[in-house]
Structure formats: C-alpha cells, structure tokens
Image 1: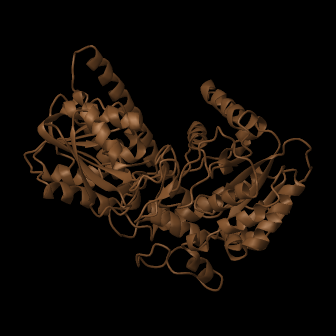
Image 2: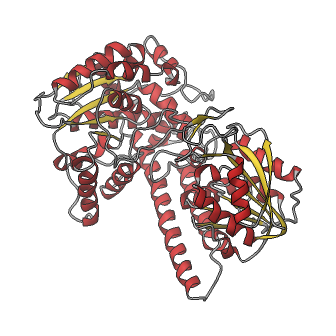
Image 3: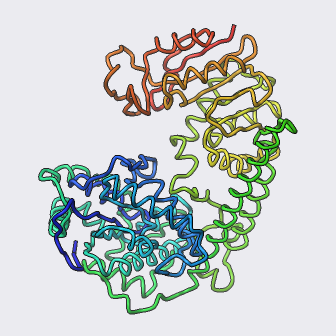
Amino acid sequence: MTAGGSERPREDRGRMVVVLGMHRSGTSAVAEAVVRLGVAVGDSLSMDGPSEWNPRGYFEDPELNRINDAVLEAIGGSWAAPPEPVAKLPPQTDRQLAERMRAYVKRTVLEGGNRLWKDPRLCLTYPMWGPLLPEAVVVVVWRHPWEVARSLRRKYHFPVSASFHLWETYVRAAVANSDDVPRALVGYGELVEDPEGTLARLRGFLGRSGVHLTESGIEKAVRAIDPALRRHDEAHRAASSARPENPTDRGEGPAPDLTPSQERLLGALRESRFPELDYPVERPESRTVLDALHEIGRWHRTFHTECARLLEENRRLASEKRIYEDSYNYVMRKPAVRAYRAVKGVARRLFGGRRTEQKGEAGDAIRGGGGSLAPLPHRDGHRDHRVAVGGMWDDIGRLQFEFLVENGLTPQHKLLDIGCGSLRGGVRFIGYLDDGNYYGMDKDGWLLDAGVRIELPKHGLEDRAVHLLCGDDFDFARFDTSFDFAVAYSVFTHLTWNSILKCLVNVREALSRGGRLYATFFEDHDGRHRASSMRQAPGGVTTYPDRDPYHYEFSAFTELAARASLGVEYIGEVGHPKGQRMMVMRRA
C-alpha cells in the first residue's frame, strides 16, 4: 500500500473516506475493513446486503448506485460503457438530477453522519461529486486484470478484452480523479496475503489524514478479510510468471494479451505507486465492444421506460373502468418480447451468434469472448434477477414445482404464485399448467421484467399466456378469477405479522372452496428466540423476531389463519436448502 497527495489532519468530526476501484476488484472487502477500523456509517444509509456474488455484502447504498447510473447516462454512458471523461454535468442536464445529488449529500453525509462512500461508479463520477462533498480522503483499490476479467466473465459473460479495457478505464479514472486529495493505494492481492500489514498501513494513513478511528478496530478489520472469497487468484499467480490460462474457462482458444498501456499501468500498481498517465490508451478497437454493450444498455433503458409508460396508462384506464385487464400478460409481454429480441439482435450482430472469427477491428476485440447473450446488469445496480431472489435458482424452482405436483396440482388447476419474482418456479409451472392458468404477483417490477424478458424466451415460453401483476398490496381480486392452489415461497420470511395477515385475508377471498395455500417460513421451533436472533439449519441463515428475515413460531400462523378464516396444518421439513418449513392453509 502506498499513500499520496497532501495529508492535512482535521480537528472536527473527521474526514469522510471514499473507496474507488473497478467492479469486482475487492472494493467491498476494503470498505468493510474501513468500517471495522471505525469509520462511521450513518443511520440514514441503507447498505446493500450480501448475495451470491458478494457473500459479505457490498457496503454500498443502492440510492448512490442509482444516482451514479443517472449521472453516467446524462453524460452519455453507463457503468459498462464508460463515457469520455468530463468534469461536470452538461448544461442541458435535468436540474432535478443536480438537486438529487445535493439532497443525497445533505441527507447521508452532512446530516446522516455517514463518513464512508463506496461505489465503483464513483471512479467515473467523482469529479461531479467533489464540489458537493466535505473534505475527503480516497482509498484506490486495484486487482489484477486477469482476476477481474474472470469474475466479470462469470457474472456477466463479458468478452475478455472488454473487461481489460474496463479495468484500465476505471483504474485510470480513479487515479486521475483523486490526484488532488489525500489518497492511498491498496492492492486486493496484498490485502488477502498480508491483511495485518496492509491494514496497519491503511490505518496509519487514515489516522494521519484526519479520519477518526477506533482503537480496537484493527483486530476486527483483520478478522473480516476472508481469503476464501478470492475466487480467481490462480489467474493472478499464473500471470506473475507466464501468460495465464484463458479466463473464459471454456476452452475457446487463446485469450487476448494485455495491451502495452495496460501492462504499463499494471507495472506501476505492482510497484505500489500511483502511475503517471502521460501516455495514450492503445488498441481503441476494444472500445467497439464497450460501445456494443452501451447500445444494448440503451435498449434496456428504453424497454424499462416503455413498460413504465404502459403500466401507468393501463392503471389510468383501469381506474376509469374502461378496461380491467392490468395483467402483465397484456400490458408488458408483447413489448417485452420485442425489446428482448431487439437486444438479442444487437448482441448477435456485434458478438456473433456462435463461436466464429469475426472480420475487422471489432472481431479482434471480441475474439475469445463467446456469443451468448448474457443477462443484462440491473439498471439499479449489480444484482442479477436470479441472485436477487436468493440464488439456488434451479434447486428451489424444482423443489417448488415437484412439491405442488406431488400434492395434487394438475394442468387444469389455476395457480396463484405470490412473490413470483423473476419466475424461478414460474417457468416450470407455466410449461406444466394449461395455457393461461398461471398467475403471479410480485412487488418488484424489474424482477417481473427479467422473468418475461429473459426467462420465458430462454425456456421457450414466450408465446404462453401468463398473468403477472406488480404490486405489494396483495390485491389478488385484480386478477378477477379464483384459484385452486396458491404458493408463497420465501414470502412470509420477509413480512411482518400484520402484512402476513393482510395477505392471508386476501388469499382467502381469492381461493376457490377447498383451495389450498402452501407457504414456507423460518421457524422458531421451541419459542426460545422471541426476542433474539437465531441461526437456521441447514443453510446457516440468521433470522430475527423483529426484522427481515423473520422467524415465527408455528402457533403464530395458527392465530393468523384463524383471523383470516382459514384452516392450517403444519407440514415441516420439505428439503428446503435454507431450512424453511412448509405449512398448508385451506379455505373451507
């Protein structure tokens, strides 16, 4: 680790710390270490939680992600297709965006007490935030480009050369945009291999720069570094002596070399020094791939805008009693399929539909990248639609389907899928049930969007009639039908007692006589955790009596069912990989 810039201690409540670095570079690990060292995180900050891609959490505020995405779009780019460097928002930018930025700084920093900011997009947008922020110090995190490429390939199927170009763009931007503030350089490999030494040097830098820290934080910070999370370190070790294996892991031939400018940048970082940036970026054809990603992203944003317009128009018509058909099937499915096919056409034109050697400069840039269309990054951040519903997509989706079929679901039945998300179970039910017999509701429109846009075509179901509603009000009457079966998988685990009651009251009205609701929940088996957290087995999920994810005694559902005029029966263990238990409620 090295430090640079001027370090001027302050006497007030301490400077804020900004963590900069390319996506998939270890910025989350460094941010967690900074928090463990004692940097304050204000109560107003809503941190994004753990996921399959980052088991310890991201230490990011999703609202900051969204604002940065809006800033990048305003200056002509996105996180995956960085725009040309600019120092301020263009004059034609909507004034609401500038006001939104100022309000966020006031709420989270000036009033909320948050002294840590972390979002890889800040590498690109920091010049626009700088004038709004109080004095800050910067920690620039870097990781070997081969490791970054492997991680991006695994998560987004990005072509290798595009990942290299992104890595170079982000690192150069982080270095250039932090040139006039106190800053430190931290290598992720160095952090994992020598956490005590690296964090001691980081703590010393932060202390000298006027950041207020706790005395006992160093031990907590060291314990937070988990070497097992460095999933792609073999590429780093191979790169230190010879050209590493192809990071695509698919045997697609030799992977591209780093360009001379990338090698020069990497050499400076390995020497633990901030590189000079007095040289151009070579091989601009790599930019062609990023432009392709940007074009796909543009289609993605257009799709979201059009769907939002259609949904709003449909709500208006429904409120006027001119129509009562606000199911996703009619409002969104056709434009969703059109938008998906348009995006897929762009990808095929630019990347090739199969593994072939492309002609021209773009072909050189994408060779070795493969040709399949990957799920697009969510417009609100890093999560993809399978991870956002808890992961274990195939296992839990299959479990839902097989359980209901074993318990009497036939193709002729109508099924209500509460909290259907991105159709983890839905894709199996839709193919099994008679056309039009699947109905789903979820509070997150972007998950429904991904289910329609990605999963239905992927499973050959784009021409099936499905009825999907976006809402958190459990107003199942909007479907204007009754159901033989209903399922709520991993729904009550996120709901308060009163919200579950509201759901059950509305489910009863939606079920046919004799209809059944199968629902899972985290169980407090013996009632010893009414005021404390507990660890579920299997799965190791920590649940709570007063916050998400919730656990309940089964007796709570006995009372809830009675209030909703439903019968209830405990089923128990059904093989759920996270330890959730099953129950069934019936309408008499």
